[in-house]
Image 1 (tube, rainbow, N blue to C red):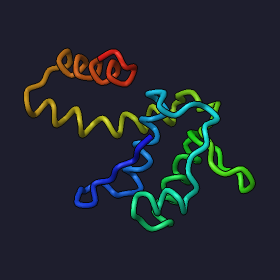
Image 2: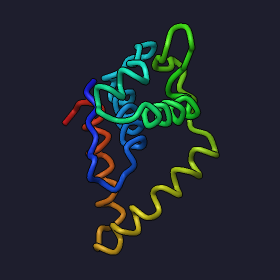
Image 3: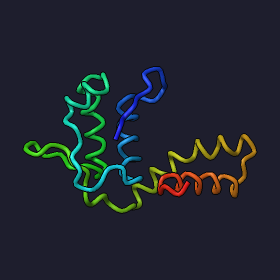
Length: 127
């Protein structure tokens, strides 16, 4: 899986790395148990500081997306935790500004749901 970062963008680089790995896991580009590059290797490949990749990996580990073992390195978790109340509360917080922006642009609930369906289809490789 190829990670690309937008150095001029507003999203922090560690968040871009984290998000792309999550998309890779959800879209099956990264399989459970698959090894990820070491922090130093990914940092060198992308052209960022190792601490930036480390921060992304730590966030992924804390979210249950990857497992980090000093001996065998980083691997995609084969047991990403199911959504719980804490996750859904966080998701609602993240969606509020997005949905609010859509509402300001007169995008209704059904249209918003259709956009979400399109994203899910792309993720599942159906579109």
